[in-house]
Image 1 (cartoon, protein in one colour):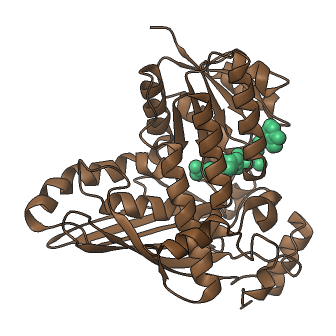
Image 2 (cartoon, protein in one colour):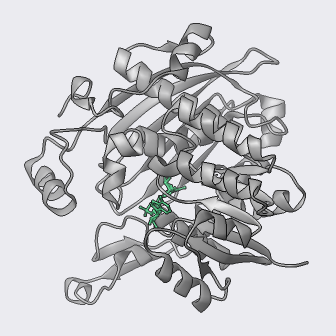
Length: 415
Ligand SMILES: NC(=O)c1ccc[n+]([C@@H]2O[C@H](COP(=O)([O-])OP(=O)(O)OC[C@H]3O[C@@H](n4cnc5c(N)ncnc54)[C@H](O)[C@@H]3O)[C@@H](O)[C@H]2O)c1
């Protein structure tokens, strides 16, 4: 079997993480990249780690002509134009076997819908990359507890959180470019994985019907002078002008269409988690059984004293979004695998080779976008949204949150 050739659009944070995942995957090459910056570093990494020649291309079209599948790993605000270029390349004869898009599929429901239409217009299989559904720990607990849910009854509560101290690039903090704050950026993960862990085994990922959404968005850290100074001076971010939420929490109520039983998926996301670094915390509670996962509980800890800390080159080699270089520190030695990146690439390639969509497709990405936008609408209006109401769904189709419009000051209370 010939190696499957992946091409990356974008060579930033996620592209590098996915390249690290590729070092653990057989028969898949990083064959090429197109990006505005970072492409030389990515190509060097690829060659040094033996995961592919990673040729640097000057256009989406050239990249598409030289790979089997293309991965959209560029920022949210260039999704539609890049997807149009992929579709044009396919029309011009690029022999692609699939298209991959990172989360979130769109910044609004209309944008996500457009992505679905463009991708389907190509006739090619697609995969929406939501890594948390591919986490080995998430799927291991499903395998362990799935049989119990059949005899005892299903999980009725899932609580899923992803938190860290804030994103690395300024565009994430600009709600007009990113599509919002932490709810748009990380709420999509926690809403999706909550839905998934509540879903009975052997049922499709959209089996449970979301019936209501209640969410809160808040800007918690901006009120602190030190933090405000740091954001302004180091990152050029001015939330006095266009604020976005750095904290969100909410619940989605789901209904089992066969039994009528309801369950709750609670999500919590923040960019103000000033602890060791990225934490994914999930638990699920059923009748007489439960699971809990915390990615900061690693079997490996290291201790680094003050004197030795001066020698640290890069604290993030220990943990994504690491905030400190000394003391007793958590190390996650294989984050690319832990967070599900290895499994999501393997899944997409396997399915594309068979001419099929990945486990999660763009239509699923659209459903997640709808739930995220429903979260903004619920927080804005201060109500629980009835997602089964056709009028609410119609309103969501044309909705852009006030925060994403740059009008966050009208809805966000600064603490
Ligand atoms: N699954 C996850 O956990 C996860 C983590 C981080 C980011 N992401 C997603 O991945 C995407 C990229 O995020 P990132 O953190 O890598 O961003 P980044 O800013 O670190 O990197 C973006 C890359 O895209 C390139 N780029 C920008 N505009 C471009 C254009 N018009 N054409 C071609 N290349 C362009 C940049 O040059 C850069 O190489 C985002 O949608 C983000 O939400 C997902």
